[in-house]
Image 1 (tube, rainbow, N blue to C red):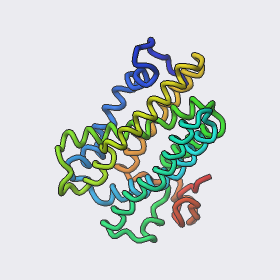
Image 2: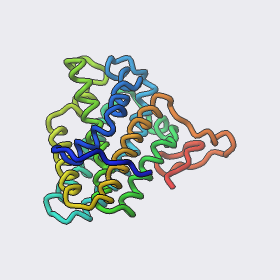
Image 3: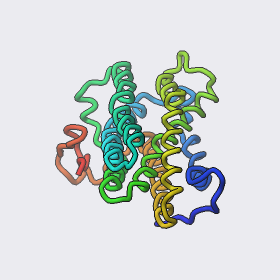
Length: 254
């Protein structure tokens, strides 16, 4: 599906793309998962499901970032993208490890959670973009994961005022952090530069990718809220999930 670009504005591609998805971005912040996370009432089992899925998503996200770094035509951009790939696998996994320890999760408990259809679809979309889309389109596809998380985290922090004694305070602080905000600004600046020097058709494909991945962001939180399962699992024997370990009906990573 191609999306009609709004009339150009002084803010560039990112301002247009955010304006185009404004109602969706509001729906993401208002999603029951994020409102419950904000007030601290999010049930443990839903957050655990989210953490397991997010840890698997981040691996695919980092692979796509590494692919973008390899295709960058500017050394500074390549360094930024490669550093972001490292951050996805290192810094954010520290956050996951803290909650895994806090909740007393065992390896077997985590392995028993199947990779959700949404998680598999989102990571597959990013991996496909890394292989088949033009470099500017790939960068636009990667942007929502940065920008949406920073928007949600900072919005929650503004509403709560503090993360002290909050059960999900570390999550909020990670994505409302000024250093993370700087990373998001870097990703937006790169996307705007690439859009400014490309043709109209590529800009349309960039918008399509940005919108689709913003939609996947909503779906990802919704899948955690619903603890999404494979509806086909009832008709299949136990299968091995190459990403998450043995899990019935996971669908695997391929």
